[in-house]
Length: 333
Ligand code: UT7
Image 1 (tube, rainbow, N blue to C red):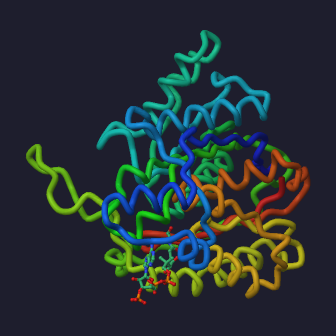
Image 2 (spheres, rainbow, N blue to C red):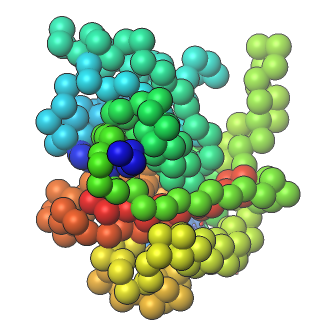
């Protein structure tokens, strides 16, 4: 029997502190930074984002998202045999946020203790991280190395923003999304493709590092927005077509496009190139901002829970971000 993998449950979590553009504009104005709701909405489509409290880490958001995904899949944590967390804002330099998450899940109730011992690791592919993590988990399930995985995107980007740089600090937010991915005799994941091109490292990065107990370089996010925009628009339609061709499908087979939520203009342009109407695109960037690796599983969970995504629907997930990285996954729910 061929082994496939299939999503059996989704979950997400947003920290309670929600900042509208008006809230952020007022906060930035107090520091002499000039921006406006009009500029942010017109250039990005963002209207609000969520920020974590100082004592909350990526693993805390991931934990809540996983609890909700496990409930949706009707699974207990002790049935999980693989954890992959996509994040660029880990709790620590090491160990992985996935290992910390595993321990939090193991301690959450006596019946969950069995999750301890399964492989757990992080994937670092910035905003493409969830597509990378899902592709890896799918491969491990296909080979028989795992049967039931938690695949998570979790970010606290508010920690790495420079609130004196209006070109970046209005764009990002915090949150987490998770799926339970299980072995199945029917295909859930139909095809995936991943890419990276390191020559573009400088257009989107956090250049700082830790050395000898000091932070060397700037530990906040730097982005050449226009360069990222151009590259993103160029690669997303191509990788989508390539994944559709691999699966023997066409654009007409796609029920929902769930792109990385960075900018509504990038999402609309990709949908147009793929001849998909705006009603087929799941949009959460207006309410979440850009949550990097968390944005795709967050959007997926929103559309599953509000009833738009139904069992049997065909979804096209697309990630793009720092590295430069990009990738796509076509799947049946
Ligand atoms: O998650 C990974 C993927 N990331 C992305 O996909 C992001 C891709 N890039 C973008 O989404 C867009 O490039 C941005 C939203 C970042 C910027 O939009 P843009 O239309 O490319 O604006 P711009 O950088 O060309 O700036 C236009 C103007 C500039 O003023 P001048 O030089 O024309 O006078 C900026 O200084 O807007 C100004 N500006 C702002 N004004 C008010 C830049 N940021 C702000 C701001 N408020 N927050």
